[in-house]
Image (tube, rainbow, N blue to C red):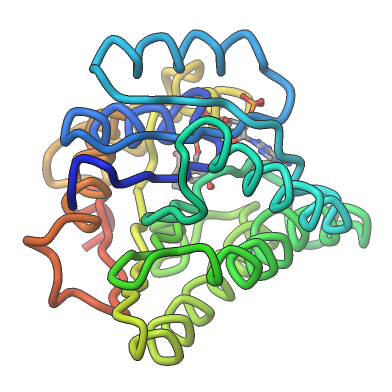
Amino acid sequence: MNQNSIALVTGGSRGLGKDMALNLARRGINIIITYQQNKDKANQTVQELEQLQVKALALHLNLSDTSTIPVFVSTLKNALLNHFQTSHFDYLINNAGMGATVPFEQVTEALFDEFLNVHFKSVYFLTQQCIPIINNGGCVINISSGTTRYCNPGYSVYSSMKGALEVFTRYVAKELGHKGIRANVVAPGPIETDFNHGAIRNNPLMKERLAGLSPLGRVGVAEDIGSVVAFLCSEEARWINGQRIEVSGGINL
Ligand SMILES: NC(=O)c1ccc[n+]([C@@H]2O[C@H](COP(=O)([O-])OP(=O)(O)OC[C@H]3O[C@@H](n4cnc5c(N)ncnc54)[C@H](OP(=O)(O)O)[C@@H]3O)[C@@H](O)[C@H]2O)c1
């Protein structure tokens, strides 16, 4: 990790992605975040990143529509040249995503396709198209979920896509090792963010139930995750490859 390194954090405008971006910036990494709708929050995050004396930029990305990925990558290439005076970046953090609690028997094909696009298909092709502009020695981190290990009713679509993402990560690690590029999964447990319409943060009963499933007696906060992602990008983590690191406080052991 050198002072000219650059990380792309999708969904870095708020929540977990914002904390990842801040932790990377504290290590001197320049940051590109993406947002889907919330440009104001993205701009506010860019300002906070710049206060940490790194270069920062926000780009629009819509993972719901896979046809927009090549356009995004083209915008990214221009941004790298114009804002960072380079053609390559170092760390791809595939974090952006959304949640919904829908019982298996009520899942529609449209919902399935939305989750497929956002959590798997767009991430797959975004990663594929970014690899040529990731420096040798860089890394890919895919954000999955604790719910690929344990089952949370209503999460069948979401968690199935995250499971696919975990398999994909191992293939990236296998096929890109020759470039010195590592790939790992970070799988958070329940975290009180805006995720799934703030379901965990805004529902005291649910929060208490989930806290009770953890030996540490609480749900997570965004600040529990970002430092782990920053560590995985660092030289200290150079021998961690193709792994799923669950960051959940040991929920449902
Ligand atoms: N919070 C949890 O309990 C939890 C647990 C396990 C895993 N995760 C995973 O962690 C990641 C981040 O979650 P979070 O809690 O930080 O959520 P969040 O606070 O709701 O933030 C979501 C981020 O993703 C962006 N985004 C949402 N839909 C998008 C789309 N279709 N295309 C592009 N960007 C999109 C949002 O952009 P805008 O701001 O523009 O809307 C925002 O930056 C997700 O992959 C989620 O599955 C979360």
